[in-house]
Image (cartoon, rainbow, N blue to C red):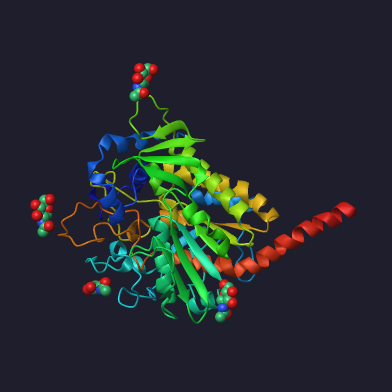
Amino acid sequence: MEFPYLKNNSAVQKVPIVVLLTAATTLIILSIVPLIYFPLRNYPSTLLKTTTTTSSDEPAATVAALHSRLVEEKVIRVADEEGGKCDIFVGEWVWNPDAPYYTNTTCWAIHEHQNCMKYGRPDDGFMKWRWKPDGCELPIFNPYQFLDMMRGKSMAFVGDSVGRNHMQSLVCLLSRVEYPVDDSGLDEADVDDYFRRWKYPNYNFTLAAFWTTYLVKSQQVGSENLFKLYLDEIDVKWSSKMQEFDYVIINTGQWFFRPTVYYENNQLLGCHSCQMPNVTKLPVTFAYRKAWKTALKAIRTNNNRQSVIFLRTYAPSHFEGGDWNEGGNCLRKRPFRSSEITLGGVSLDVYLTQLEEFRAIEEEGKKKGLRFRLLDITQAMLLRPDGHPSKYGHWPNANVTLYNDCVHWCLPGPVDSWNDFLLQMLKMEGRRSYEEKIQPKRKERRLIN
Ligand SMILES: *[C@@H]1O[C@H](CO)[C@@H](O)[C@H](O)[C@H]1NC(C)=O
Ligand SMILES: *[C@@H]1O[C@H](CO)[C@@H](O)[C@H](O)[C@H]1NC(C)=O
Ligand SMILES: *[C@@H]1O[C@H](CO)[C@@H](O)[C@H](O)[C@H]1NC(C)=O
Ligand SMILES: *[C@@H]1O[C@H](CO)[C@@H](O)[C@H](O)[C@H]1NC(C)=O
């Protein structure tokens, strides 16, 4: 048993996990650069504790059940290759001895802090699982097929360091076929891949990264650990480039748990975790919802390219035995079964908020020829407490105070499955957009009759 404090009683086990996940959402992006800029070790811990008490009282619904409800309502439906109706986002992890499909020696794109083998992680079982949807198969990522489909196309990743984690997994999976060449040009490329553009020469495929922590305009207050968010103003560093891309994969999440002050129309609305006695306290989801609204509206109004936009859902963190700054850690060596854990508290609130904003924009997007899709990895990743770097994101003797990273994902690792999902969705895209195009015509005919 890896967790002495959880005992062997599975009934007891289930509750603390849900509670701890709630607490864990107070966590911040742990990549070293934000740590240097905004040293987390200086946070008064009371600031961070506040969010743990805001968990909602509603019973924890399972993500799978929520997802299934959307499928029933025909909001999300991803068919399997045979054209059957199967929800690829509901399933279990099964053992896959063939994984991984790259290593830290065949792929140079692994970020230092996710190169867990380099920093001495002793076990490698976490690499050897694949996602098995209930009722169908999710094929393992095929880099040749992916690049073939992307010939002459362009794809952008927009978001935070968990989004970068996803992109680097994609570069690594594709490295079996081809390495990209840097094509950043006037974009300010940097070692951390905040803003970068690559080209796959043999496929004329462009891949780009746009770093944005909140999607909307934000500003750090001096050197304090406090951010001003302008919830109705888009972060133009990414939004102004979106018309150049055929596919956009967008995410945001963990940064909203930091101390933040909210503005709209340049008026102070309130804050979260901010310790300003006169300012209205607002929940994380208040800003999260508005940020998505602003971001999706910006994409809808600025894009005439008929792009496909994938909203990647919230990836839960897995601190146990304490919060991120209280010695919490992720030491499990195996995935959960779906019966062993449910999403709850603020994590659930954040997930639901994103689903609601997705549904709101989806119909509007269609009118402009834009296709919004939900890359709904939340349930799959909830089951992967074993896939985080923990203390293996740096040398053990490094002279920096780094916390156990239970937010990002080791590469190779469970994030590789996000590209299994992505390729499957791309394969379905042709059929799906065709169906959507003929759907309105059918309705018209009915009206005429
Ligand atoms: C790759 O991981 C091994 C341990 O499996 C480590 O010894 C090596 O330094 C790592 N190499 C790179 C380039 O990260
Ligand atoms: C590469 O793709 C772009 C579209 O992304 C297209 O405009 C261009 O002509 C292509 N170049 C070649 C050499 O095929
Ligand atoms: C907070 O409100 C009180 C009473 O309205 C006022 O006296 C005080 O100056 C305010 N403090 C700040 C920091 O705005
Ligand atoms: C490590 O940190 C300590 C205290 O911050 C400092 O005194 C020491 O010089 C550092 N050591 C190295 C090798 O950087």
